[in-house]
Image 1 (cartoon, rainbow over the protein chains, first blue to last red):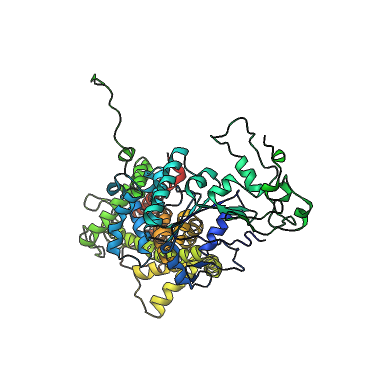
Image 2 (image 1 turned 90 degrees about the vertical axis):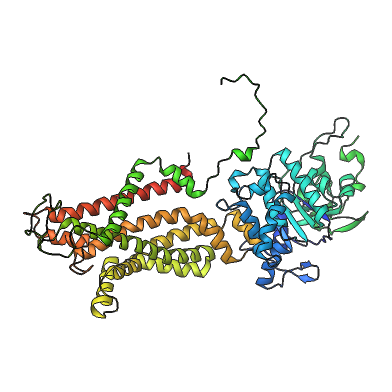
Length: 312
Length: 306
């Protein structure tokens, strides 16, 4: 079974790229393969992962260990369970640095409090001595971010960093990520299914479906002018505050395909309202559609008459 | 409330109200509510104190014979009476406490030293490492432990004279035949803990395997390890008493409770106090450790949290 296939993208220094898609579309697998951490029995069968001019796939065990955490850091969906419950948070932040050669142990110790202040944890100097259960969800996610950034990585992968948090906290974490991205200049890959998070944080978006990139481009262009029917439907499935009149909320009928037995042709055709005969047999390629945007579709939404989209 | 002042807005940040409790403090808070465990702990404390006192002072030397008439029952001079050689039983019980503590604690330490690393290795690395270690554990469970321990003591001390017959060889024999409980428990803990997100997070941040095991897996398994080690103590104590009762434990003048029970066994019908004193001491000790162990298990079990 192929969980992720033909994914190709770049992230520039200081850029924030969003990867969106529904559960099981391969977002997390894509991120995990960047660190060569695909869970058993999965493996990377082919492809290239370049970090600068270094080849991640062919790194030795020691190189990849140093690479994880020092060059690329990852923060997770659930800050509740991603911290060790029996160790003090300050120690855990220090540990993140101790595992790498970037800082001496003295420097690591001294950097803990500033790191925690940097992620806006109030009274950081006192709180380093607390245990994770004494932190709220949002504060724990800040600790995770502090751990991730402690080695000054050039890439931060955030895997649904706000999903487990409540809405008010989500906003503050997003704001924090945006500020840190500006302050530290680290590139960010943001994995999410929350389109509003993408809209507020990312310069570029990658939309994934069934292990493939179906659309990619600048955030503004994609939100304004989605070309793939899947992206279009996704955007139609969320309510918008600026919408006039009574635009109907759309849901996408059907389920994502079973990847052990994928449909022939375009993977989205069983759920697509705009499919043509070709979609049943031939898989489209990811082609430029103008404006720096790419889409994997035979039809493209710009070719669909407004009336068919249900627009007035 | 007698004050008429307006309620002030609560400006104390929430984090200052959280009580600082570590795993051990938390366990301590809960075990204090467990009466039986406290009684057990009290008895164990008494046992340890007696053991310490006995290394420096006993009413009579433990080996001194004919301090009074043989088989004499309890008197004011000898509260627990005298044995078949006229030795003061109270002194010998005290000396026995010392042996008991040495054997129990020594065995628990050795068993943990063997079991914890093996269990961590098997549970953390899984694969063939686990297959080999688990295979050995299962084979070892099939070995009749008493028989092997008897042979081991006999061979090491009596036949080859490698180690003098004493506390150490008994600890060795016990640990050799009973290290599997701790190993198996730690393996299970490691298997479960290695899948936890914080372990994955540590791996993603480039932590070394050794660091993950030492800082993330081991501390989180500490509760069950302490419990298992506590249960290893009475097992070792009983083991020593059993060997000594059979005459294969500590050599004759040593005041082992098991050997003392054997001394009294022959005069059970006319001088039962000789056998009763060590057996009662042994029973109370075993119960105390089991109560404490149960209490610790409840205290460390997160599902029992109230």
